[in-house]
Image (tube, helix red, strand yellow):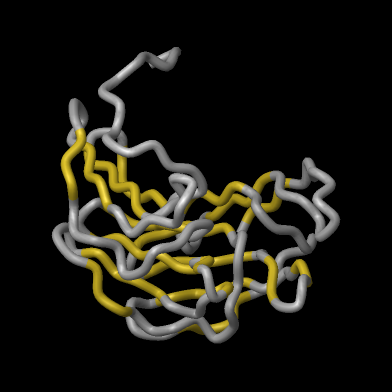
Length: 180
């Protein structure tokens, strides 16, 4: 493919939502409509259908994995940033092992049972270089990033991840790219 083409719009307009999956088996969840949402929608390559309700109403989370084995972390709710982690099995969300530190605007890569979450913003308003690995049951510390930042783009796997862009704590956009 060499261009984007229009497809079926999803049912509820939202921003700052999580996503996981592929072009023909995608999943979107949470977000703000402007009110915080717990909606999940699944895409099959041609249309959208409702999925199981997301674990909490919130936005800014990071998703990784597939439509039938997704992982979400870094949720922002009305009470603040959460340590909650949610796992999706294709029909419902359940609680996963909580993050060691509540982190918002992190980036992520990998699958539900072999994921990375890196960078982000922790209380009170500190941008970090932290990298955490998730094996499906527990979080562990991995080598830190070189540049502290938040709200960047993460991609890849737990052994071949890429982090691009983001911003510093003041909101200045960065062009930094790092490989894991």
